[in-house]
Length: 246
Ligand SMILES: [Zn+2]
Ligand SMILES: [Zn+2]
Image (cartoon, rainbow, N blue to C red; front, side, top):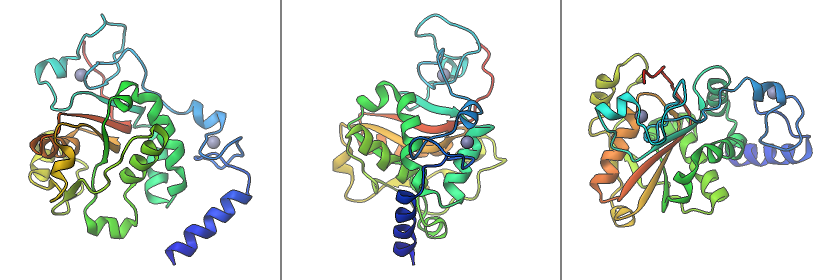
């Protein structure tokens, strides 16, 4: 039974010493990583493209955009992520998503908060990227919604869990290029009926666990801006980083 399982886990968690989210080593507080696992993470840090958040290989003049944003400005205002999707970053995402480790949400949100900078302060409303109900049923929780809820709690910001909905399940996007991903997602995400009024004129922060090509975020942003949102920023736990040519 889900409730019993969760409650049992909560009782256990509150009795047992806190453990590293990745390797299980004992740590000072719940939702932390041990020193060794911490060092295995690739934190995304300045210098960054002020728009998409891609790290630059070398220092650049303040405000300088990366080549990709110059060539084609994204529809989001800014995107930021805490970790590179590789090594420890991927392990964290997979453990959170597949191993039923809902207890990790607060610790992961704390990592995202550090990377968010003004994105979190300036947001009126936090929204998670939606999962299709069928996938939600299979996985039992929407990892993006858990991250959004934890961020909202930590930053004292309102969270709209059901602002967006997926109209049909999308096939796995792995192996598809950007254009193919966008086509697979076209029309798949919309603002939920009855939620438009909450979005008009608001600065929205869209939350997800991984930013790959931005195709999923793009489908959400289209829907949000179409409903009258003033702006959309994107905050993810991890992102796939390709070397940028400045
Ligand atoms: Zn560890
Ligand atoms: Zn950029």
